[in-house]
Image (cartoon, rainbow over all chains, first blue to last red; front, side):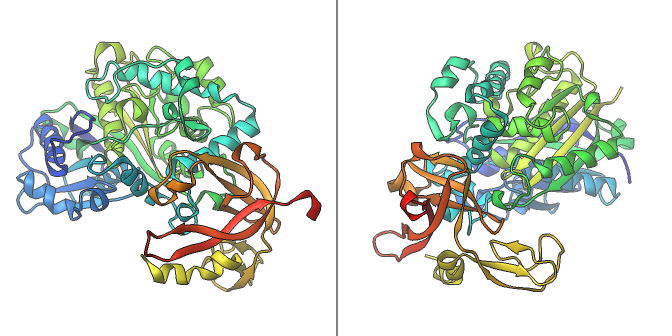
Length: 386
Length: 134
């Protein structure tokens, strides 16, 4: 297998993009990434998206985006893995380039969640869960995560307010990221008073519905001198899966999909959690941040909160977390999120983040994109090329 | 309205019918074609008794459209006596009275109505077992 690298990145701001359609968001991010890489065309395009059919009445995104991006005739396909669609699309590009089948692949994650009313988007997002046995019982996607959080609080004896450390950090970093949706800070006191969505998950535990697109250009690492964009090595991009339905899991409080994904990622990269300089976690809800830190090997089971307090998760901390705002602060355009995470990690490794959120130790980054309540997990490890 | 789907699910919705693996005895709900444990494809229907304990729960304040009239309502994970965990609404109790570990039993209730003209969907919910019944 060939080594692979990223030589171009592009992203639109994460917003309620009422003035832009799905294809223009995708084309903007993809062409920006191609300009950054200095390429006129690519061998293939992988589109990460979850809900274009339900919310834009548009499927067949591969060829549509290829056409509108001016890549006449190039192969393009949509990859769907719920909220993990973005990184799943990167995984497909990595396979194509590593195998030698293609030399340069464009990946674009795109999502428009604000086309219909919020309620309709919420119902569509719930299709990530088990339709027959979870959703028709009246469960919302937030509710599924709330079932995990309630049991977590019960078993490990935390106060709900202990979880504020994660969204407070995410918002703090998002202030400095011009592409983030929420560029304001929040306080633990505001968190404590925030309105309940699905008890014990409140509004400030939850990442927002948003629109956006992000893109990367994946190439063979041996060829990076052919491209203009500064290359970053993809040491691993590995998938782990678990049951879609929460009630079918052996242990509700252990994300086995995360464990399977990181084990492979650490194995193929030859690294361990202590080698990771900063981590872009999938903080769709605060509880997922905690359980991801645990199953990824950073903290022991039930100990993510004391780990975060002691180690430090700010830009200056021992493990900077969600440095550009994460899903909570940057926003969560679901099928684009996994690509945003990787784009932000590349910005950090290139040393081009706004100064206030540029991490000092920027050799090795890890990003983790999670589909559903942990049924598809893609962990990507990236390294600076000197 | 996806009528075939609700017709197909009637044994699960009304009788909690899952599967029992004929090779290793593992029970499953929902029914699975392949045993989660030994991967055998040989199984037979198995009806759960519908008694269990509350493992976790949430109170939903922002619901999908079709459940909007019920807000706030509780959904729980219930550990059935036979050793399988399932997801269901908890009824006949105020959400603030719910406690992890409480004893519950299955009842058939209206799940939702499909608009003004569509059919009414029935299925399992769980309620507390009253002290007098113990």
